Length: 167
Image 1: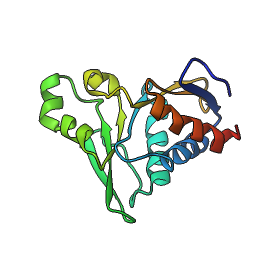
Image 2 (image 1 turned 120 degrees about the vertical axis):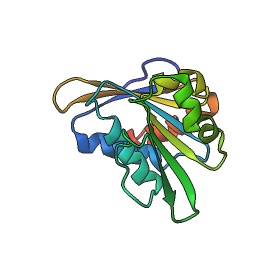
Image 3 (image 1 turned 45 degrees about the horizontal axis):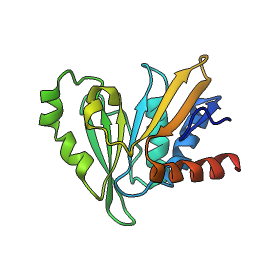
Image 4 (image 1 turned 135 degrees about the vertical axis):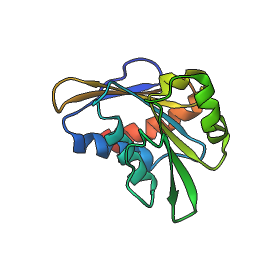
């Protein structure tokens, strides 16, 4: 693992299960109002990472790909907080984004939002978001870069790095 550039951490996952575990470690650290924007091509492992985030965060149900429903809400029983899992793969216009209510979800103070295909809503993603770029290296191996533009959010990534990699 190495620091790629300021406010980013990179690592390699060797399996779908390991990608899931990375997500679980991150999910356990997310504060309210966190936004996670997961980028990568089809089959890169975005949903595996999202499932892990949901598990670590404490979602009552396992996150499933919301490709057809676009947005799924998941509750955390301990405090009734909501994690919104958003898949923008099928969204083709700003009008669709507006009709989905994505702006309201991103503004919700109590919610956590995990977005797959965030580039389709780039203008709506807040600067304090955590971006995760997943690049396939082989059939099972993935390169992941976790980054942010926000120094406060960087503290979450530093804690993620410490708890995951020991430093």
